[in-house]
Amino acid sequence: MKDDIQQERILAVRRLRDGEKPESICASLGRSKSWLYKWNERFADDDGSWSESLSRQPLTVASRTSKEVEEIVKMTRLNLYNKDQFCGAQAILWELEDLGVRPLPSERTINRILSRNGLTHRRTGKYEPKGTPYPTLPSALPNQTHQADLVGPCYLKGPLRFYGLNAIDLATTRCGLHPSETKSGQDILGGFWEIWKRLGIPERIQIDNAMYFFGSLRYPRGMGPLIKLCLHMGVEPWFIPLSEPWRNGVVEKFNHHYQQKFLAKVGMTTVEDLKRETLAFEQRHNSRYRYRKLKGNTPLRALAAAKTKLRFPQKEEIPRHFQKKPEAGRYHLVRLIRSDLRLKICGEVFPLAPNLAYEYVVATIDVKEQKLKIFLEKTQVDEFDYRLR
Image (cartoon, rainbow, N blue to C red; front, top):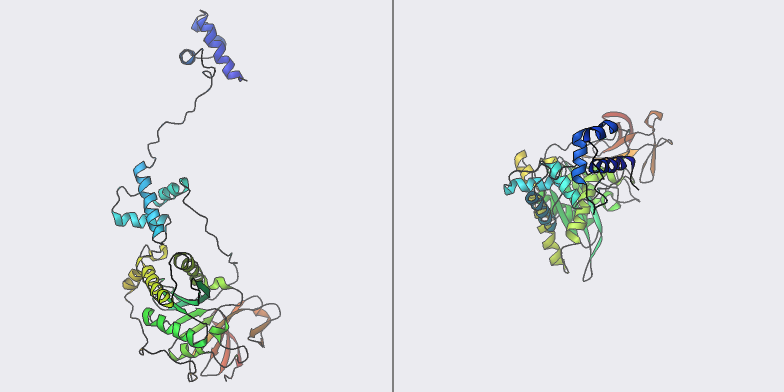
């Protein structure tokens, strides 16, 4: 059914073709002669839609990205994806710069091209609550702070079962990887030792509360093998809050890349394959992957730009599990204090003041002084005797 405006156009053209003067038609309808002549030209006996309004959208858009540039963007993304590298808009832009593409599209334009072609996916992650201050560790320089985690058990065809120890330097995003058959104390020591031989020894290492990192529930004051190794090497372990894995967010995100871009795509059936390909992936990541936080640099370029002298293990052989207890050093546990005002460390309970309710505190164990010191932000708020065994 035609609307009133279409009926008006049909009637006006019919009156003109019946011989009525244009002046009288326009005067009666309140229209101009150009309007009348336009619809008269569009009139067609064999097309009933001639009186419909046409779209005013221009047939061509001057600012639209050329088809050639769009194809280059799509091909560049495909190449990055096939190499198991980051393939978002920023990574594509950096790659186009290296290829010398001119004119260079903006990051926003690349995002529009990816969206038009269905080449985007939504990033998801765990929500991190805001409001309660959380202790942060320095990460401006290489090896100030590493985050580490153990992935597994993982399985390869064969079958081969193993655990992947992954460490990330927060300043440069360099990764260090080590696969081992078990998660025993000696294998954990060996994994960190091999990683430190390549990445260097950090000032701090942030890890979760798994017993293969912390030690023993039965002997919480005995210091586990990793704590002993760290203190002997001048490294301060930091244990994140219980049940808050997102506090180790950098290495947790890297674990996803490790699973998706390495384990799921590289064919391995033997221990030799696993060791060889793990080192190859570590080198590929550190030399080719680019990060926005590094202003488009790779981890190794960021390390070179920092011009920082790194510290490496002086011995080739891996330290043994049963090491001499260190006589100095500190290790830390970050804990959220709830309404019961109790700090819990492996079954031991330490009462705290009411003003610490719902605050993150740092429980620092000073080996030399045999003290447990409680800090809120940078202020010491309590202290307990803590005799290590």
